[in-house]
Amino acid sequence: MRILYEYTKIQTTKVRRKDLIYPELSYKIMGILFRVWTNVGSNHKENFYQKAVAQDFKEDDLPFEEQLPVKINYKNKPIGIYYFDFLIDDKIVLEIKVRDYFSKKDITQLYSYLKAKNLKLGIIAHFTKTGVKFKRVANIK
Image 1 (cartoon, rainbow, N blue to C red):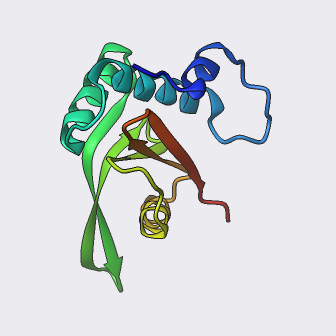
Image 2 (cartoon, helix red, strand yellow; image 1 turned 180 degrees about the horizontal axis):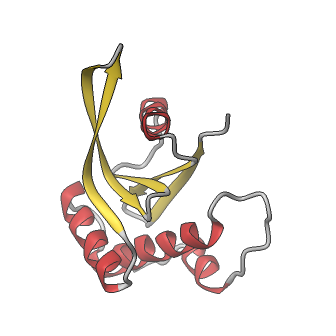
């Protein structure tokens, strides 16, 4: 089993950058994601990882909502609904995927979620054969 460098870094590094949005909460989430990958391994369905992440959020007393529906309105009438994988501490949207690459579609989707709820930060986490890869997406006005 191979553990990625990021896992070690997240576990041992103090937050040094002052410009990051929610750095401590983000690092806690990353630690949980890497813990799940280390224990569950690779090549599983997306919803298996989601269930494991939710279980660890509960065990770590991290407040979250799962599969949160968010209505999109136009002229005060609903035109659609987004479903977030996770909304953590009413601050960070977390989307979990099982693939090796970040697509423009994934990033655009997450950015739309952030705008819909007027949130500052989202994280896309990809569970791959070699570990967890992540991308932070900021909604800066």
